[in-house]
Image 1 (tube, rainbow, N blue to C red):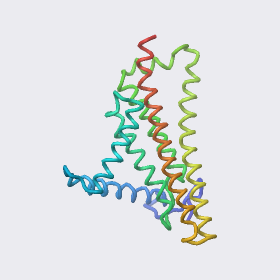
Image 2 (cartoon, rainbow, N blue to C red):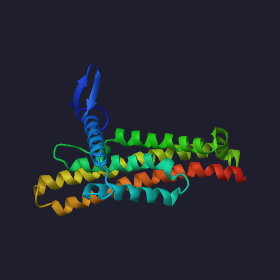
Image 3 (cartoon, rainbow, N blue to C red):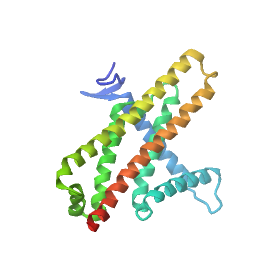
Image 4 (tube, helix red, strand yellow):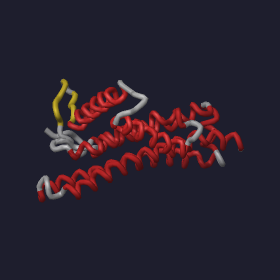
Amino acid sequence: MIGPGLLIPIAFRIGPLAITQTVVVTWLLMLALVIFSWLATRRLRVTPGPLQVAVEGAVTAMDEAVRSVLPEQASQVLPFIATLWIFITAANLAGLIPGLASPTADLSTTTALAVLVFLSVHWFGIRSGGLRAYLRHYLQPSVFLFPFQIISEITRSVALAVRLFGNMMSLDMAALLILLVAGFLVPVPILMLHVIEALVQAYIFGMLALIYIAGAIQSRETTKDT
């Protein structure tokens, strides 16, 4: 059976509610990430093993990336941005597993992620400077620019969702065509490009989210100065 929209297969139904393959893969990914996180952190040692070294290196790299943009608020923003990076990376790479499709190749998933970023931008902005100061920055430098500020907020969120969806859908289609034409062994070097692009797309999405949040937080200082 085929779901509405962009022909997403329906895995099963719960009464009138259709559960698509994207939802099932997303649930499996979240479960796998929770189990991995528990296994990787349950026995932390002063002298780390290979797994702990890899995890600490990844967390350190993400922390440094966030601090390069928001040095003072990094501890507040890091959990959200790091979660985005980890989940999107796993979702992008899921398409390499035979029989699975990347959840990020489904527009509903990327739209949900973009909505989360949209809400988080306002949440961090209000949390940083208060509701009144945050709303005031929409009227700077002129009240006549307010409609354009709103349009900008909406369009960049739409672009965030469509960019990730378009790139991952094309990557999954290209990988599927290569496997169908050349088999499983010949295209291994080419499929490595899929891995690299999946990592790049996750990084870009997270960095854009970080930049949007930084803009919302720093708008408080701009409003104060004016």
